[in-house]
Image (cartoon, rainbow, N blue to C red; front, side, top):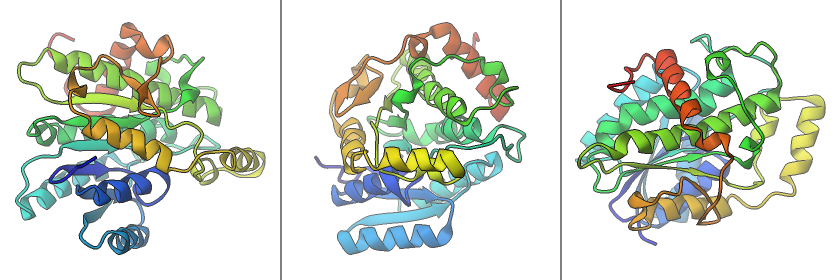
Length: 295
């Protein structure tokens, strides 16, 4: 695998799947732009990657993806970074950042945090970077979902403030939203003449990361800890992400959901066009983006 001269943006890149993907992409010759919330953790991650691959091209930017204002600022910083290095395009966007909330907390935009970070942040950042992704000969948008999306249904118009909040269900809804977004993105952009950007969703499997223990306590934290110890190394989903980033010909693939470098059948709801359209409409409303023509 070679990603030489390709620009890859990775959110949630200071730990877990995101950090491993950043390290592997840098080793493969990519120009890596990692995104994290904490400046010190960003710098620590950058130094580890440089130590591992001394010739790596890696830059970290700081943003809290729970804030739409910061997402807009992040997109501007990414553009500035490319300009400074005389680069024209973002070839791969990896929407990896995610969180699990044990209780209902609202962002500064008035949106339940799980839905805001896990779905709306990828939705908004993808749109803001679309002009740069479109400059690539084979732009890829890869969003990390989860098999927790199976046996899940929801009302998109209520996702910003669910009347009954259960942390696991909110997480499942956000992961279902990742696949609905990816599928609808491809449907909308396939009709554009010359469009080169294609979206995928990844099932990472059960991975040994701390995602379920950052904003939880008590029993929930204990359950996540016991589950993560049974999980695979982040190197496993990183391989699938970078396979999707690099494999020639995948832009014409009809497979949306991938696991272990192979297509996987998502849930029936994940392929529901009516649900995808409702989610897209609500997402545009919540992020202030214009609806596609004819919507």
